[in-house]
Length: 182
Image 1 (cartoon, rainbow, N blue to C red):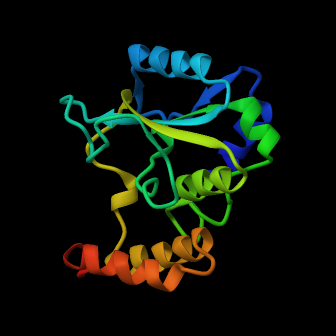
Image 2: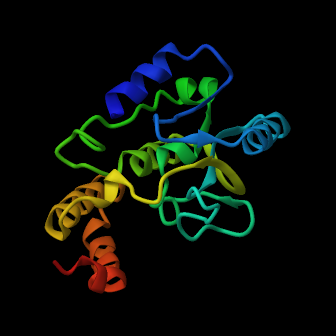
């Protein structure tokens, strides 16, 4: 998947890009709000919106207000919740890490790494309380064993926090221990 996203980054001709799969329904009002946010802030490179399930329920917990993204609050990003300014990403020379995400040995974290790399490149990335898409309640990212998920998450944390990753892993384990049991 990261490879196809990188291809989309290369081939995109518009000012903004949103990624979607065949099981996504995009929300036009949300997309319009995202485009307005880009128009209002020329330094903005990535917007992270929200997604809902087919019943209209938020798929996870989100910030209630717009908030600058950091390496500490961007880990739950889904690709279909991201809208990017193509020129800003091209200027930053950031790509999706093809060692992560669906179809890669580390089956998750490509979105988080992408955002972390944009931040490291000095790009402005913001989450906003706007729904960009509807996605089925079940997600392919949830279909892995606890051991496979933990191994992939450790690899992600090593990539995002090169020096601090052991501390981040301990904090993640402390927060999520009950969810990680087989």
